[in-house]
Every structure is written in structure tokens, then in C-alpha cells.
Image (cartoon, rainbow, N blue to C red):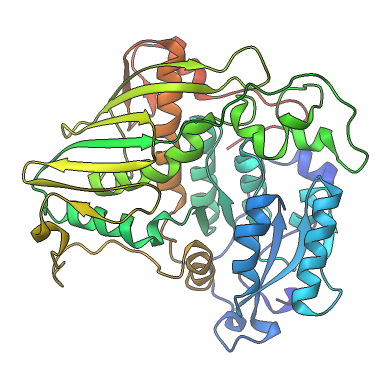
Length: 435
């Protein structure tokens, strides 16, 4: 997309220093659809995309889906790991048969480009919200991997996206996966009667405690930028890339990694996707004696204001929704839909019943379509924040070791300063988040 032709974006080129000092500034951006987005899929009409994070999921899952879209063009890649970044740049150039793809180790170089319309963020969790907020303030629409790092971060992200009228897609495929969409629609349309109980099973975290022994930082790796807003810690190979998920400074462990998937189906079916539970209690253990320190074993119970009780335990990932007149669910990730009767299993959703919005082409296609229409994607910012909150509530309940009362409207714990202390985390200077 040529910047001179755009009336949708009001952006400014910012230096890295300017980004650091102005993350609290808000840009007022119009939401006019540029005419060049509405024509044929020529290069002049394509949505230009910058990739921030080129690890396994970013390259193996997100990149191919963007490259195959005729209405999008990847023009820049960014990663603190120079080897991964260069490999991704070569992949993009090979696909387009040119040498046009730019690269940088600093995501602010992506955000400073006025000719980039949207970003795909595939970084570790502790960077998700900060980069998303800065991207929105730089005039970009955002697709970002789940989840947030804290509940308060999710609140800032939601306010920022809505204030600036950006398109934001919480990046998971679940709402386009037929089995999860189908079970949510069946429940919402009363096929199992009144929903009473939801049983969620998430996987167990991979075994091993991680080696905390400090090691030399690889020459082609910007470790300080990888840490970013997280507390300083000595480099070790098992701290970074895939295994960051099991370290509290960067993620919320298996509950956040997988819960954002199956809890979303639960919230969708329960019609609480813009709210949440009112009570949480849980027991569990944490990894000890090594590098990893997130939850190891867990048994969590949520209660909703509508009387629904949801449980969460480890095992084979699955979900079961039980009502007064039957149940629906599946066993295993994307497992075949099961129900208590063939009548429920084969039930047709009528034209005047509830039809939950989805996009069979998936999260990336849905996001790009919404960049053009300015409508909300199927997993918009508020819903992504709310399901991440459900994950965080489980971790907090296990940490404090007591039953917690949660106010989903005010988004804080009732009469529990100790639990409320976990709603946010400090950021390492000079990084900060305001809004």
C-alpha cells in the first residue's frame, strides 16, 4: 500500500527513542476505508504487513497463511534472533521472487514505517500487549498471538484499541474450527437444555525443570531486547524461544498457553465471553528446583453468576458441556464432536436461531477481511482479554491458595489485596505501558 494514497492511516515516523518516550501518547485515527482496499488484488491494493517474531509458530503457522493471501503482502520481518530473521526474510523473498523484504531486530523499525498497514505479532507472551499497544498508537491494525501477561495489561490493550479504532484479532484458530463452533452453537440454542457444568481438560506441561546455568549469549541474538520489559536474568538456552512458556516472568504456563483455546469455547457457549466467573478456587503445584516455575499440576473450579460451574484439570485436552437435557463435547484437540444423543448431535440450527459469527477460512483471513471492512474479527480484543483473564484467575487462585471472589464488571478481587497484587507486574525500565 502506497502511503500517499491512504486516508485510513494517520501515522508518524518515530525513532526508537521517540517510541520509548511517547508510549503514552494517543493518536486520533479516522476509520475511513481507503478505496485501494476495495478493488482488485493488485500490489497497489494489498494490505502491507510487518511480521514481528519469526519463531516456530510465526513462521510455520502464521507466515504461510499471509503469503497465500492475494490481498496481503509481507514487506518486513523482525526478530531478535538474527538467524531466524534472515531465514524468514529469505522465505518471503523466495515466495514473491524478489529481494524486497526488509528486516530489523527492533520492532520499532516496523512500527515507524508509514507504508505498513498491519502487524502480525508472534513474540513471547511478555511482549504481546506492549507491542500491540505501540502498534495501535503508530496507526497499525494488529493480529497478535494470545495471551496477555496480566489482567491489567489486557484492560490497557482493550481501551487503546477501542479509543484508536484499530482492528485487533486475538490470534487463535478455534472459532473457525467446526467442532468448537458447532458445540457452542448447540449450547447457545438450548439443545442440551440449561447449561449447568463445563469440564475443561488441558494438557500437562512438558516434563523437566529446565537448566538455569548461565551461558554465553549467542553472537547473533539480541538477548536484552528479548527480555525487554521482563526482569533481568542471565541467559540460558532453555529460557528463550519455546520454553519461555514455563517461566513466570514471560508467561503463565500451560494454563495460559492452552486455556486461551478451550476456555474460549466454554465462554462462548456460556454466553459469558464479555464477562467471566465470579468465584475461583484452585489447588496445584509449581515446578521447582530448576528454571521453570509455572504451574505443574492443577485442579481449578470456577463459578459463574448464572450458576454454571466450570472445572479445569490436566490430561488429554478436551471439553464437555453438560446441561439439564444432555451434553456435548469432544476428546482430544479438534476431536470429533460427541453428544449424549443422536438428536443433539444431528440437530439443525434454524434460520431464526442464534448463529455465532465465524470465518471458515481462519483467523488470518478473518483479520484481513476486517481490515478492509473495519468490522470486529471473530476474536476481538475484549473477548481475547476476557478469556486470558480466566487463565490468569486460575494461576492467581493457585498462587494464593484460597477461594477468591471476582467482580467481572470492575475486574478486581473483592476484599483481597493479596490477590489483587497479581493483577499487574512491573516492567523493566525503560519499557512502560500507559493507557
